[in-house]
Amino acid sequence: MKLTILASIVGSAAAFAPSASTGVSTALSSSPAPVNGWSVDESKPCYGLPGAPYSFMDPFNFTKGRSVNYVKRLREAEIMHCRVAMMATVGYFVGEATPTIGYGLDIHHTMANNQLAELPTNLLLPLFLGINFAEAFRASKGWVNPKEGSLFTLRDEYYPGDLGFDPFGLKPTTKDGFVDVDGFVKMQEGELNNGRLAMLAVGVMCAQEQFTGHSIF
Figure 1 (cartoon, one colour):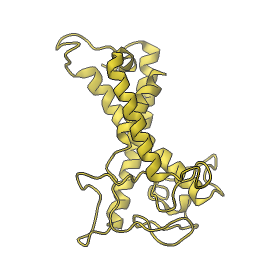
Figure 2 (cartoon, rainbow, N blue to C red):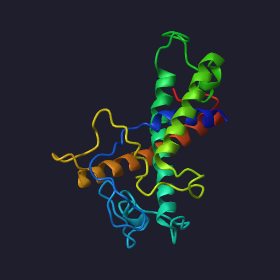
Figure 3 (tube, rainbow, N blue to C red):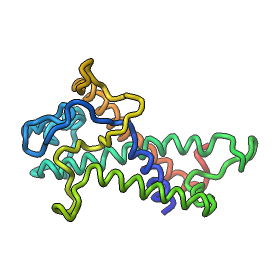
Figure 4 (cartoon, one colour):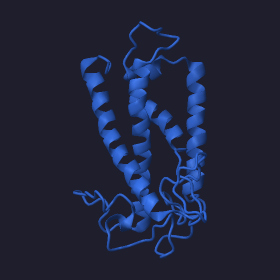
């Protein structure tokens, strides 16, 4: 439960990871119109979404015979968990190895799995409020209002993980302000593969701490 709470809090920040949308951002679904340079290609795994042909493995056929919207939902879940895991991986090391006012310079920290539970209520409440605001923003950005359509449906024009927040201008663009398709694909594949590795790393670190009762350090 502690790890779930930690992941939720980190996820609220990860929801705002840079992945802004500029230039190309038109309708999708079964339309050939591209979003971030991607258009539906039924001949490729995951309809040609970046990262799928590069390292595609689906032994349980989660994507086989599924609709474009369903596959987009899977990618949305994957990329958000990737971002959570990358931040959590850093969080394990920072939380256990950096000096703090509470622990001082020489006192060994408690293990990261327990640190969230040690926070006072007056700090936990703002964090949970932040989660609510972040998830409400993500839902309003990418998901169809249940009153307007079916449940669990992404908007046709929404690209999985692209929340339109890029204060540092990291998203590859051309001189004309349109999406640099090749650069975007490379960045997306890098994010996905680093995130997949981070998900494995966090799972191992969490299990190690729970099993041994000691921190990573």
